[in-house]
Structure formats: structure tokens, C-alpha cells
Length: 129
Image 1 (cartoon, rainbow, N blue to C red):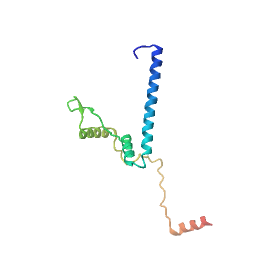
Image 2: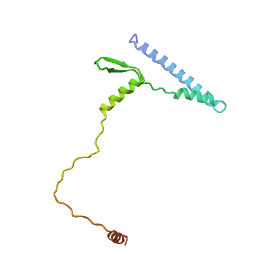
Image 3: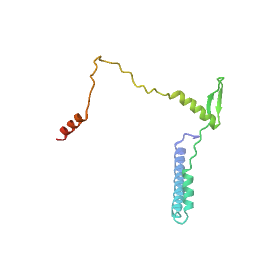
Image 4: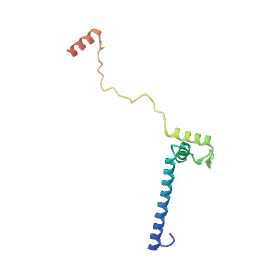
């Protein structure tokens, strides 16, 4: 604002609110008229929907360092992809599937365990009764 006078600020807010109110009324009227025409003109409705849901995702230019250490701007899609691939391979590493190393706490060795079909059936019959 050019001045710090209270009257100018209040007048600005009043006009801003009027403009906002009128813009909302226009949008509401437009949406209501499209809604009324939906049954008779579905193309008009879907055209409006497309304008509201159209999304474009672009990755802007990226800053990087070349082999000589100079700052460069990457603009091509393939080069951006390679740059992201190099970046993420530095961050994410492949972990080994060996699991944690566990030390033996005891030297005791268990005897061989033998399980027969008769033993299993005997235990099952005992649990059912």
C-alpha cells in the first residue's frame, strides 16, 4: 500500500470484498447453468469438468555439476532421469539378506529329536478328549 492511512486501508478492504463477492456470484451462476444443461448437453458439462481437472506435471530445469565441477542446467527429460537415478542410487543401498549375526551363548548340544506318526496321533487324540 502506498499510504498507511486507516481510511485508505478500510476503503481497499471494502472494495476487495465487493469484488470477491461478485466473482463468487459469477462462478456460482456459471456452475448452476452448467448443472441445468447437464441432461440436455452432457458435452458442455464434461468440457467444464475437463477444464477443472486437467493437470500437467512438469519437472523444471535442474541444476547439477558436470565432470569438471562446473554448474550446469539440465533441461532434457532423459538427462533429468539419469540425474535422478544417480542421486537415488547414492541414497538407497541394497542390504544383504544374511540377517544379524548371533553368537552361541551355550556349548550344550541337543540330542536328536525323533517324531513319529504314532506320537503325533496319540497327542492329537489326547487333546481332543
